[in-house]
Image (cartoon, rainbow, N blue to C red):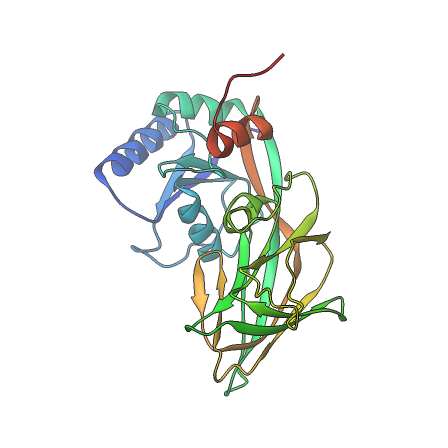
Length: 282
């Protein structure tokens, strides 16, 4: 990647540590002839993206929130982890080292597909939609289990009963889907994962008991049954919408360009942030 001439620095929270870090990075970049814009969704309206690069400060949640606010832009994204796990972020660096990394231009690019969720609301029949790079969770919105009809490319798969379903990208496979028993899927694999949440086990329900990995171009349609008694909500990358009757999920056709420093290895990141490092056997 060529040296950027204009960079947007985005953070969705403000702390003394984050503010100091942003000031140090932006000052160093400006001194080297790179124009910086600093933006927070809490402070201003959404900017038009005319930049060569967007730096996101925070954790995975901040990354997803800011990408949603910016409508998942096509410019490269470099995340700096100020969160806890930060699986989608790069490790926090000293401001001077980060500037060297950014201007050096030696990156590995991960393309994260954007999933589009569209739905019909129960009762009003109003339409809604949202996009995400991590996961789309259709789940119960009361104490009752949900009853769902699940269709894959309009082929009926299952009459499901349980807490709901997680529909995730490979990037999101290490989050809620993994906690629910789904597989970890390498980001170089183009696919989408459907993982059941606490499926009801009595045989008369025949609920899906295992995750399914599907091609990225699959269309998934889920229809709620008896939603007045068994209300459903959908959560798209952490943003919640209630009163869902029917949900459709498919790849939007574009990707977020996530930058990693040269030398980044997915398996090493999986080991250090998810599995935990143990002693290697010969």
